[in-house]
Structures are given as C-alpha cells and as structure tokens.
Amino acid sequence: MTSHKVHLPQIKVPATYMRGGTSKGVFFSLTDLPQAAQVAGAARDALLLRVIGSPDPYGKQTDGMGGATSSTSKTVILSKSTQAEHDVDYLFGQVAIDKACVDWSGNCGNLSAAVGAFAIHAGLVDASRIPQNGIALIRIWQANINKTIIAHVPITHGEVQETGAFELDGVTFPAAEIGVDFIDPADKPKEGELGMFPTGNLVDEIELPAGVFNNSLELDNSLELDNSLEPRNSLEPKKIAATMINAGIPTIFVNAEDIGYRGDELQAAINGDAKALEMFESLRAIGAVKMGLIGHVDEAQSRQHTPKIAFVSPASSYTSSSGKQVERSHIDLNVRALSMGKLHHAMMGTAAVAIGTAAVIPGTLVNLAANFGSRADSQADSVCFGHPSGTLRVGAAAKQVEGQWTVTKVSMSRSARILMQGWVRIPDER
Image (cartoon, rainbow, N blue to C red; front, side, top):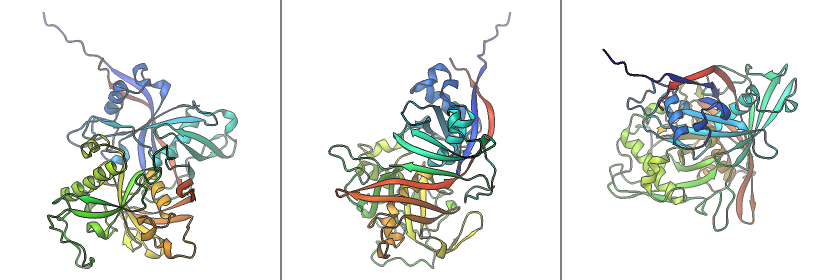
C-alpha cells in the first residue's frame, strides 16, 4: 500500500498592496498577523521574507510579492497607537532580496505617505478625526525610530481620495496629493552624544582603503576633473570629504567629483559596475562606523538599510530616466542616492529629509553644492534637487540651539493609492 506524505496547506493573511511615493509595499494590520508574528522576532521575519519572496538567489523575488528592487521589497505593520496624541503606530521592515534579512533599523519616507490612508481604510483611526470633506491630519508614530509623522490625507465624501492631478517624478500616473511632515526628524543628542551630526562636524573625511577607489568607469571626455585629484588607478588610500547626518535616516553625503562622477548619472551608469558598488559600500560601511551605528565595517552587511550613501553636485541640466529634460535653472543641486546597494531610481523619502535638512545648514556638502552659503538668505528654508527620475522640493526648518543644530520639521508632497487588497498566501511551515 502506497503511503501519502501529508502536506501542510498554505495559510492566508489579510494584506493590502500599496504604493506610497515612489515605493511599493505589503501592508498589514498587526492583529491580522498570525499570533507568533504579532511580536518582533524570528517568526515575524520568516513570515515577511516568505511574503516578499526572499531570500532569492536569482534576485527576482518571483515567488513572492517583492519587485526585486529596494523600492519594492518593503513591508509595513500598523496598529492603533500606543502613544498619546497619535492615531497609529507604524513599523517598517526593509526586506533584503538575496539574503534572509529584514532590516528594522530605519523608516521608509515614501511609504509614510501611504500609512495615513491605510490606517483610515483599516479602521485604525477614530471616526471623529476624519472629516466628511477636507484634509484628515493623521498622527503617525514611527516605531522604528520613535518619531512623529503627520500625513495630510485628502478626504472626499468621508473616504480617502486617491485620484487627482498631482504629479510626482518617478511615478507614471497622477494621483491625489498627500502632504507629509516629519516632525523633529533628527536624533536628539543623549548625554555624551552629538545628535544630528554624530561626529560633531559638518564635514569629515572617509579614508577608502588602497585599491577600493573606483577605477573601472570610463570618464566622459567632456568631464574635467580637478588636477589635484589622484589618478583613478591609484593604489594609495583615498580621502573623501563627507557630511554625515542623522535626520530622517542616517545618511552620508560625498561630492560627486571626488569619486569620479558628474552627479547627473542614471541607474545604468552605476548599478552594473561591480567596482563602483564596492566603492559605495566601503564608503557606507566606514561612515557607519564613524557615525557610531556599527562597531566594525563587517557589521554593515547585516544593516543594509542604514545608513544611506549619496553623492551631490552643483545644479546641471540632464535628461531623466523617463526622457524628461531637467533644466539647471529649475533646481538647486543634483543628488543621487543608493539604497540596499543599488542606485535608487528616484529618491528615498527619508533621504530627502536628510537632503532638505543638510541643505539649509550652512557648511554641509549639500549646502555648498546648492551654493546656498553665498546667498543673502544663507539660511534657506527649502531646496529643490534633481534625482534620476526628475525633481523634488523639500522644505525644512533648522536652527542652532546652544551650538547644536536641530531641525523642527521637514515637509514634502507625495501620493499613495491601494493597488490590491485581500490575502497573501504562504506555505504553512509549522
């Protein structure tokens, strides 16, 4: 008699697939998760990895909901807030594509735009806070970093308005505009710490080990580098100026010229260059140690989400990834940022917070690239920067208190909408 092996069925979990800004992710209400996954730990991580389809050695996430990019390998867990004067608690998990790792060390600023809308749809917001028509101010507690976010969600006839005429570079179709305010986004210094600039300096130096400095790119013949720069094939250590800031998300800014770029590059110029990616990862890991985020560069592999690494350059005209022309006169500077080891197709929302903050503080590399320091109003209150998909304007309010820089609010406009809702199914692996 033939014996039949008993196979456990798939389990189904209520979920919503949403776009927020230029990112997409799978959203869950905490209480809809299986009991074991309602608390932080291995069971939760295993569930989210299986939902997204990681780890995938093919790098495609074919057997899951992930889209094989850092922008689409994301998960969100929401619950009614445990904090006074807040509506919803928001926990973000960045899922690695080829590794069995969910990084909980930071926020996703783009998906923050979808949190308020999802919270209303899921019944997590008290009905008294939702107008029949107008703007609902949803008070979000960002539980990864213990910060407050205010989402300005448009409401029409008592329901979230998702369609509209607002256009966001990096997103194909227009939608309703959602304002997002990041309140006090910079780390407050604890005793013996230096807060927003963890090294205590607006500009530091990162020394790349010999042989790591990117020498594999073919320079554009029209690019003229400063004669003081070392040859690209130098086997000597290379010192790179860097602004390291902890606002929105820990971010390391370097000058494009110092690492052999113009600053108007698109993804194809970097993401297929293994030597370039190695250089950026070395900058990120060494900077992470300097920022006190890790104790040794080897730990950076298990902390891929933070810090971010970005490079800046003075404003220049270029053609974006969609073919749209970005004019120098319309922007203050160019910024390119990497996320999870690849050049981002647009700009991470949290990195935009860091850009906006650094831009309005005189002396940072971002501020200098924007040439704000020479303006009569050197204490600027907003910045418009070019990224691979187009442009983004960010407003920021920064001030010095007892010699320490602090930022009270960073604001930007995004959009969000539900793409699909129902259940995700994963194998029951009890």
